[in-house]
Length: 468
Image 1 (cartoon, helix red, strand yellow):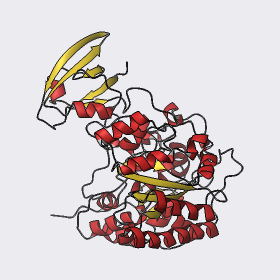
Image 2 (cartoon, rainbow, N blue to C red):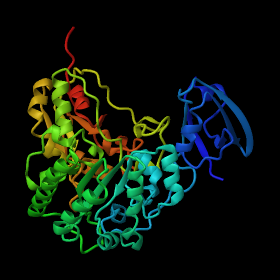
Image 3 (cartoon, helix red, strand yellow):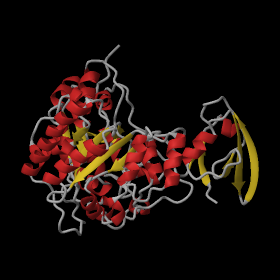
Image 4 (cartoon, helix red, strand yellow):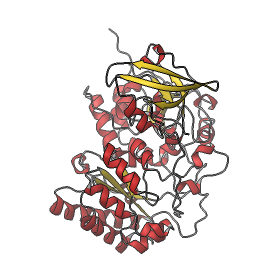
């Protein structure tokens, strides 16, 4: 039977007072054998929690007393206690297929599990979805969920997923929406395959069949140098412009029919097309921020708000790519992945007296967002603040996002930088203190300061200490 291992117990927590220790296996909670952290969290929400534990092969039962709704104080080894439901699609654009050898084993896990969609915002194709899954989601109101659509025409979608079930699996999306579950969709656009008239037809299909979608992200595919798919290539500027024009036209149609824009294009399209980003209001609350849509506008707004002394809630993405298979939320759903055991402490967010030149570590695309904002940041910093662009040689291709930088690429870039500078590293490049290639900030040739991936953290990190 599935079980979860306790990796940390908060000192003084109800679990600690009941005698739960790191290393214990959670066999059952309140008599229920649990498959995942979702069921676990429902059970431990009670004021009295009976836990069946296994320690050194011996099972024992403990009673945990706590206030209703209060954290129990445990961190578990993973989000899923049974096996991850792996993906049986063979999408040409799947990034897992484009990973080089030698990375952490967990990064090669290709999931299509609705539970990871609920917990971490992973996109699922629903090709392995079942009636039992639908019943559980409806019973426990597990939302929001995130679904990869790619195309609504059955034959095109089946060809994109290289799975005949792709032609029919969107029926589950309709049933989820009919049940009132909040669902966000995604279209990964592959040039010459599902752009142009196919994209236009897909956006029409969404209006016709899935008008209850909470949002729809239209994003470009990433093509690394490790791809073995000759049909895949990066977008040209003309193609990026065409995607933006198509999405813009459909936003107006959705506004007329539904009263909202519904579909949003990724920031990368605006950078590729050399077009300004839409106004903040046009993102309608940034529902696909973690999908790279509206990050630039959000970051800009956070910086200017922080410079003006205003507080804004951060909408920065959860730390690290692929982190969902490496750990579970400590307490509650969608808990930040960077705060548990093994997490790297962030740099202090207090004001500083250090006036050394500051270099902001970023990818090629991130620099184009940061550079226009830096003059205002330098006025506050009292020192030079510039971007340090790290080329992504590890993945290559058109991969230019900061979150996919590796320790090896940072090492190559930092080795050529002179001493006497402060290097600020956004925490989005780390999962539990490690880069995708397994290195840590301590392995780098220059000391770096890890800061939050949001504008307020940047402003705080460069603000000099003022005399009392």
